[in-house]
Length: 218
Ligand SMILES: Nc1nc2c(ncn2[C@@H]2O[C@H](COP(=O)(O)OP(=O)(O)OP(=O)(O)O)[C@@H](O)[C@H]2O)c(=O)[nH]1
Ligand SMILES: [Mg+2]
Image 1 (cartoon, rainbow, N blue to C red):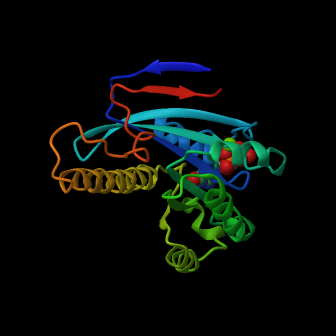
Image 2: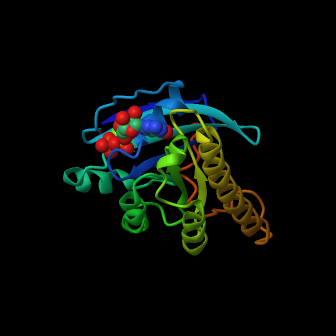
Image 3: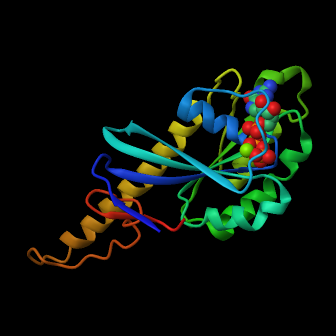
């Protein structure tokens, strides 16, 4: 177990990249964290992660992004890494209908294993292959509305809306946390007690990093 105290950011958000194999999860992560793309990338084995620190509404947010393997044989590992995630990019391939049909399965996976307030962004990747499209954007929009997800079509290859998709997830998470913090503050002030009141903000502690120890179990 590695532990460290990091004062270089205000918030640490754990995000997972999830979806069928070959939809482009690893390349989306590469594009977002290193501005790179590999046409012949290898299938992810187990799980990998990368980070990027950016500003969200004036706060320094470190996104710790876990790239899971889409292959069936790694399913148990994938579920394990969803634990504690506060955001997810659920990726399908716009040219492969089956990867879109499986989105339901991945939503269940997230709802079963991740944080109950998880922000889910559905990303229809490979938008550069419009001529091979088998999933109309309209179908995805309808599903997104029904399931309460955000939705973007992306292209890791052409760097289309990858940045926007992550920014949107991080902003939504930040808003949820700010609201919770405000509610906790209000609960504190409504007691009318002087300093020293104990306010239960346990749900916030996993997000707030300043001065706190951050431990990964691997
Ligand atoms: N045309 C196009 N190809 C892409 C895009 N994103 C990824 N690819 C290609 O799709 C293939 C699979 O990409 P990966 O990023 O390895 O897919 P993955 O979802 O991580 O797959 P697993 O690790 O097996 O779960 C590779 O050949 C990529 O070059 C994209 O936006 N457009
Ligand atoms: Mg991969």
